Image (cartoon, rainbow, N blue to C red; front, side):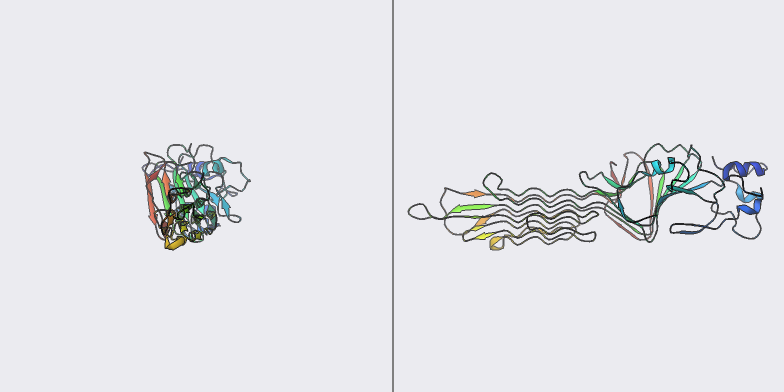
Length: 356
C-alpha cells in the first residue's frame, strides 16, 4: 500500500505494516544490502539508508520491493507470465521480497514490483504477437511495475521458418516464409522498461523459390526439362527459424541463407529467400536468385525461369513465396502507456500493439 507521504508524524507500526516486522523491532534492522540475480546491493527501497544514521522521515512514500524471478536457471522459452509468478506462494522461487521481513501482499497495489531479467529468454512461433516475457494482466491499481533487463539479460522473439520450395505441377509456387514473433509484451499501463541488455524482435523466414518446367521447341515433341526451386532460410531469433529444402536454419544472431534453385538445361528453379535478418538469398538457376533477408522481413523467393525456345505444352512456372514479416522488440496492449529507457540494445519496433 506504500508508506504515507510526509505531513503528519510517522509511527513505527506504519513502517512495519509496509515492510514487515524485523527480529528486534528495531529501525536499524531495515538497513538492508541484498543481492538478487543481477541486482546487487539493493536497499529496502530507494533512499532508505544501508548504513549509518537512519530516520523515520526517510520512510515516507517508500514501498515494499518485490522482485519477479526471470534470472535463475538456464535459458528458457516463453516462461509463465510475471503476474502468475507474483501470485505464486512464498518459497516457490518465483519472487523475492527485498529485506525478507514480509511476504508479498495479495494486492499488488502500492508495491514496487520489479520483473528482473538476467538470463536469455526466447519466445515461440505461430503469431507475431507471441512474446517471450509477458507482464500479464490483473495487476492492482497503484502497482509500480518495472521490467529491468540487466547486462546478462536477453529477450528474443522467435524466428520464422523458411517457405517450402516449389517442386511439382500441383505445387509449383514456393510457400511464404513464416513470421517472426516478439520479445517483451507489456500488458499493464504505466509500466517502465529499463534495458541494460538485449531486447530483440524475431525475424521472418525467407520465401521458397518457384519450380519451372518447359518443353523444348522442336518439329515434334521435344525433351521436357524441370527444375525445383530452393527453400527459404530460417529467420533470426530464439528459437531460430528452420530452413527448408536446402535453406539454412537461422541462429539467434543471424538469418539463414536461402536454398539454391535447380538448373536443368532450359529450366531454372528460383532461389529461396534468405531469412531475416540479413540471410543471403539462394542462387537460382541461370542467376535467378532469391532475395536477401533484411531487417524488415525475410527475403522473397524467386520465380522459376527458362532460356531458349519452348513449346506451349508442359509449360509450368511457379512463383516465389513472400518472405515472412518480423515481430517486435516490445509490444503493448492497445491503449496503454509504456515508459522505455534503453541503455543497451533494442532491435525492432517498440510501439506495436497486441500481446499474446
